[in-house]
Length: 234
Image (cartoon, rainbow, N blue to C red):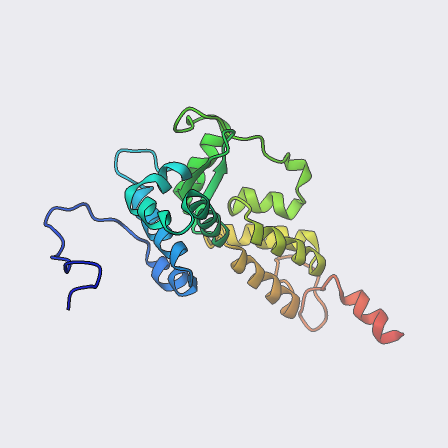
């Protein structure tokens, strides 16, 4: 039965350019997206940003102005709604965003290539599409050490990751968080969830760093052992 909005799709034409979508999108990202706006924008961005022969980064305003997204958001709040949806995709971690001085965002797919491209643009090695410049960002000294290492080893900080790092700093020593982030990067598993899993394992089982002083039972010393002992002795 044809869809209510018009005639049935007649099939894909031979010779059409195929869009490459990472398998992780279907297994890890798609099950989490419940908002129709975010789903449409995310799928379209995965197709539209890495176009052959072009720099693999797009301005948010340019992306939202393309006909499929412009038509969708026209009845859902226009450009303002589109920009909120872009922010949602960035917060989820599917897209990376580099703020520009003219108020726009430069978007890239969150991958090793996308991360390095935005780093080159931010450093001035690559020009900003459209001739603008990168907005002045927070000085690195204003970031906590774990946050700074996250940006170096994992990628750009998002609001959700910033909150998660702040919470982790209340639970674990800063050097543990730094080491977990670097271990995640070393294993090519660049995500906060992976680093957090390492921290939880270390807290439960102790660290297995080579050369670390160990307890008689074989477990490395936990920095909170002294606190626990004081509580028991009291």
